[in-house]
Length: 499
Image 1 (cartoon, rainbow, N blue to C red):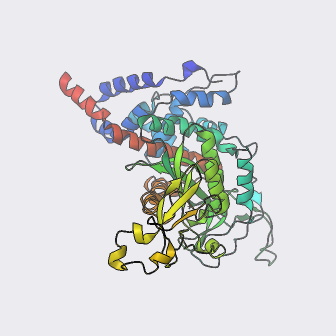
Image 2 (cartoon, rainbow, N blue to C red):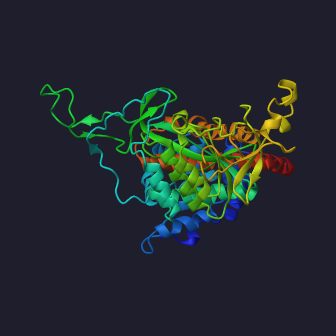
Image 3 (cartoon, one colour):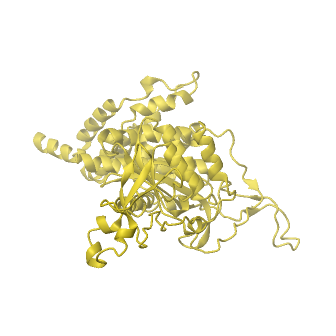
């Protein structure tokens, strides 16, 4: 069971840490200064809301669970220090008095390694884990062009998922439900309150390969090799049974592991993750997008977002329909493969009407009442028209009105081409250019800056926990930079006053 008295309130933790560091500052000045950034992070990390999320998953009988808040706080500290081994972390806590105190522990009473793993296992909601013994997966077929991503295994899967969502069925958060909600409560929602995630913020999403350190071919359990059979499909032992083969379109090679699919936002200063999933390596980004977007709306039902920005892998009618269902304006790059199948007369590749002179017409706004986009004659609305072309040669035949020819396009007819803002407009290009790289920077922070790629963990559960802890740290980085308050500096001032 988890009793409230065993979950130390954040205000009491802050008071204890300040008193402890003040008493130890003269003797351990260098060690405390070394952990200055970590102290700031944990001082801001309020775990009071985590109690409400985690408490229902403890038994109501038996011995009370202790050190649960301290374990969670120390896992955040472990990730900050780029340590991903629980065994190494517990050893470090037991040999570093200052670090144990910063995490809220009594240096003489550090929980064992099994206690940390029990904490991680408790909130993983899978009824059973995949068996380590299975037949080896075959590599997927390479795409026709090596820079392309693997196509979805089932051509209509995105359409079917979107149809279920728009009919009122949300996609389940799955085994990582508690971890996702915990991340939202202690990291994302505080960022919203601080104004770091703005109202009607822009969403950007993308996937990236996450390689498993396990042997992709497994360990043979049969005697086929002894009998002269070098290649067999007998069952083998895999240390990471959930991992699978995928195609890395950027590096043009196969990889064995997962795909980290992230939805993030940018407030012109910080790139902050809002939600993530870890599907199999061979899942297409278009499938992950509609699943992750539905889960995001389930976690934040009352929070509105304005735009959904993604690359051409997400360019399909079903994704546009889902964006409309969630009242999101999609800013998605066109996929040439889809565009070649869908040619409409008198429109260019950006969905702009072509005037009789053969020039694209100029966008003149979106009419919400009639759900249509207005386009006007380029000769009367484009500033440099007369300098470049002169007078329109077909002015009299084109339209008798002094206002010029007007045309309308209807997003309901084709949401891919008739977007709001119009595809190819200055606003569309600005939104795509300014925000598209946000999710890439966010993924880079997760995989490279926090060195997640070096973590040697061998299950989807452990990977998702490590990713969540990294994402919490990314939000904490933004908090301490935004607040610009240094706890150790205040201790130094206090020590000077006492002296």
